[in-house]
Length: 474
Image 1 (cartoon, helix red, strand yellow):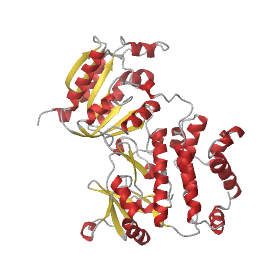
Image 2 (cartoon, rainbow, N blue to C red):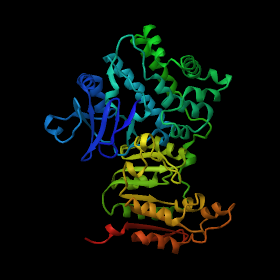
Image 3 (cartoon, one colour):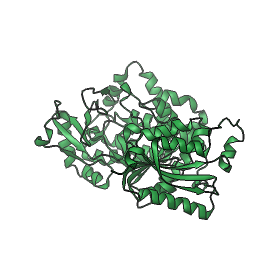
Image 4 (cartoon, rainbow, N blue to C red):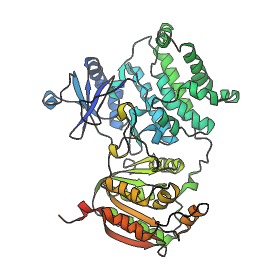
């Protein structure tokens, strides 16, 4: 996909070959040209499109009228307005199950569009976002009229951003996230092929969709345009594309993550609390969360989401982050069956190395805070991992939280706690400043503590704090 940053538009706006996406007063707008406008008129009349919009699997979209175009600028044939998603995420922050479900959505949309005379010209995983745990397709101009005899030009992109990452983890037990984060356009066949042995050729999809594609791409490496013309001359009819998509869907649906245990029961929260203490901790979090209604909350180190669900009772949506992808997979799979499934977005995030701004001029993929700062953040049983495991100074971490402008529910875990003792067992204790008094000093530099409570016979303390500028009465 062509990518060109648009400096003249508001920060965060961008241009691609489908027009320009920009922001005004919290609205997500897209300027489109005359060809895309003609496609849009046909698309919005198609029954498959309307049905998927109603189901929530395609982003709700409308065309601005002339009165709404005032002051927008740009030489567009029309401007579309999309419903916003609560929080933008990227495939290198998803679990295996999330990437798999996003791939299945893309294939299902293809199967729905083809009989109506449409095809998805782009197959980027970034075209799928989430409302809670429901995937939603957001790139409306990717739908275009199907030209008879033309191949599915998005097939290679689908393989590189969906299929190959799934193969990598399902068949080789290798985490796909670092690969996708390190290469914004996905995993090329030439990079993945050397990892697969002759025994792997019997695995579903490997021979046809990896080995054969690698050979084809090598053959036409210096003649990329000839691939499409050769395939077009072969007479690709609609049924050939349908058969390919159906075959891919069967392969993707049968994949499961390899190289790890997948028994979710092993990932229930290991909180080291007895029943009474744990209930007290839950009650504290619930009372703090009920202080007001929050538009967006973050749960850092969320594990399997126990406290995310408590905060979700008092927030529009919660972004739940943990570096343990299996814990996030557990949260994702269980959240799909819950009535609050639209409120919690699970993401795999290592807080000591979170996703940075990436792409051309750092504008294509944004850092976590740029995508939407929280009004409330949970940091429960996390500070010892940040300071001792990741060697991040306590003052620096709390300062980062303060810069977010967020309220906090934060738990301090002392050196007397068995979890900290485990972390220190094989390390020299160079953390002389890791104590409750210093923690409270760091906290009160930026926050006003509204409530606190000891837990586990004083080995832990939990705090509810608000930024100084918001904690003072008006």
